[in-house]
Picture 1: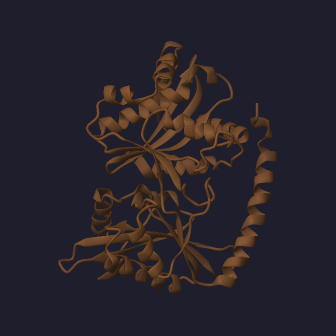
Picture 2: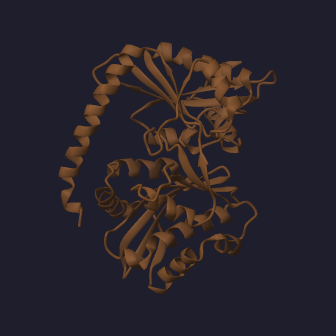
Picture 3: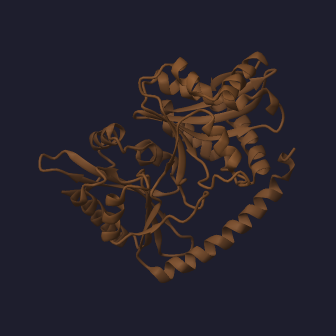
Length: 358
């Protein structure tokens, strides 16, 4: 049975959130609280129930109208949440998504599930349902990273984790402490400092950062599921991270570090504190999130991979981004306009924040 979530019914919202939080494929990007972060998008959830009325599959979908156009883009981040080999449930979820796309004049529907690339059964089902697979990029071409680094932490103590790190990583964590670096869990009063350091990081590493209001909204919506960790040296904030605990996982979501005092190794200590949170919560997994799939040492992103790899864990390759193209002509036009817009905004961003590159 297919239905759309009644967002005005608190009991239904709690039932859905509990299903997502407890399911092996559940993800914070599919949660009710994450929808509050993405308030510039509309949000709907397709549900599939069994004969007894229990939820067996769900798919949260973000819906965004294209500026100046009657068309919308539909996107399910890390959806769907169900048994990935249950063809009947998958077909029902996609039927619900198609119905929603018709109602909302969708020109495309994209999803990037938390499914490994070697799951041929799932990929074949999705292709049978009319989706094309985009899996040719090695870096960060998609909406979500296709390659991530993950560390299993189930049943492990802090000592177990530390022993799994490379020796230089253990040394750097301890060095930060000896140098006087301290890490504090902070509230919204430190978001301006975090964002300032984030802009500095973006200018150094050539990426565009989100506005301060986005992080304020994230902290407000995610509540106790979100932690802002800030590293201090000589009582000055020099680095920070945002981590999310949801279900049995902790994700490292954003990181920022000042161009100054990098020699006191704050980033190593920040990672350690987030991992300790995962252990405290009895989690199964600590997720470092994105890395490049191009592991050649001359890749500018190799340093990010090397940093995360030193903590142990494994490189995970997801199957990629699936797309159901509903209006191909409209899609090509919008893709072209988006490329021009993104290039222009990147130039404007770097000009406005040129003073942050110290």
